[in-house]
Amino acid sequence: MTTASIIDGKAIAAELRQQVANEVGKLPFKPGLAVILVGEDPASKIYVRNKQVQTVEAGMNSFEHRLDADTSQDDLLALIAKLNADDAVHGILVQLPLPDHIDENRVINAIDPDKDVDGFHVINAGRLATGQKALTSCTPVGCVILAKKALGELKGLEAVIVGRSNIVGKPVAQLLLREHCTVTIAHSRTRNLDEVCRRADILVAAVGRPQMIKQDWIKPGACVIDVGINRIPREDGKTRLVGDVDFDGAVEVAGSITPVPGGVGPMTIACLLRNTLQAACALEGLPEPKI
Ligand code: NDP
Image (cartoon, rainbow, N blue to C red; front, side):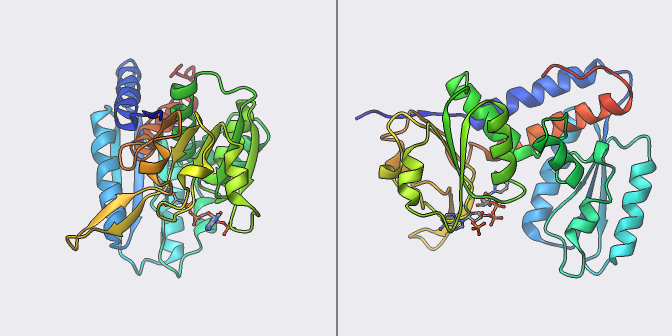
């Protein structure tokens, strides 16, 4: 029985954050990231806090805007217009989800696409799909960095992505296509999902269902990238985090695998910082840093 090598997302993310900080140190100005949080969602507050800490650690300015849950859509759009026009702000991120009375697409598409460091703007999705230079969603970029660390060259490999959301599944598929993989996107209506998964040299799970992908769905030696973050009950009444892959089973057949936590998760903020650096250099007319 083989045991997969564990892809250490925590260490790889720390290395990327250090590279970003090194590049920021060479700039004649400080890149600035504005983060907008509407409401009091506890998970969102933790994400925003982590983003702020890591932005400052990378040598950038962090501008935080905390708005009440009942903030109107017009007020939020007015703040975005102000940040679009602010030369000290190179990246704008609106923490999702937004309260129900606000139209998420309307808000995301109001961000200047060249400051859209989450890569969710329809222009950036279109640029990615058409092979143009784009600010690309952070978690998908993180997945591909991890797959490349594990496998090196990805050209010609069979990639199966389970999940077709706009923020994970679809951009991961686009990025793997750009790496010359043969890409299949599976979803809730896919027939014989286990058979489809068994074709994969690279299997990306972005479903949101705890431990759904079983050992015998995985081709021996495959690289498994588990994006899922699910909380399940423990015997002592507390909860623990698990991915979309049954890790204990998968680790016995895969060639390499990301753990949850400590795999894809830490890559997201590291890639956000890299996007902010890239946006800042582009907006200031400087060459793109090679990281
Ligand atoms: P969504 O709920 O938006 O999408 C889930 C996708 O999974 C959908 O395309 C859905 O198919 C598909 N799906 C659901 N059930 C099944 C099933 N039984 N069989 C096959 N496919 C299925 O989720 P997200 O893409 O936003 O997130 C996915 C997971 O990744 C979540 O656990 C989330 O917490 C995590 N995540 C982690 C991040 C990080 O590490 N930083 C960032 C973002 C997300 P259909 O379209 O047909 O409904």
